[in-house]
Image (cartoon, helix red, strand yellow):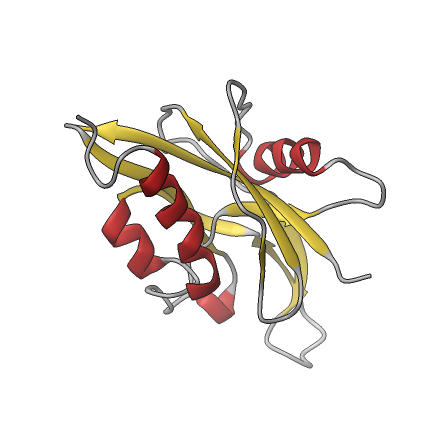
Length: 157
């Protein structure tokens, strides 16, 4: 069975314009990469774990923020790797000022034997929908488009 991931796509309105919350992957490989590399906050599901529970757990682990409210299940999408990604949208608002991601050990430089701690995610931002779609991994753009369709396009009336 292919691996599955679950995540949360928070959204809000700023001056009636839709904004979504996404993150930039941490580590030396992504340091200079921007458009096309940001991601919805998500992570792999544990065996037997319910997708929404995994999404909430991963959001907490990767942002240190508790999130609750009315979650809206979006259409699951399969990535090029074959991984199935489940995402829930939620209308909410929070500051990005003090968000810190979990870290993982990585050998850097490669084959050096030196280990460094790398944040899973190193930047967190609210972007308007159009900018977010430029920033996101192409396979995740459809999640933002689906939210746009649910809330009536780019702007709230």
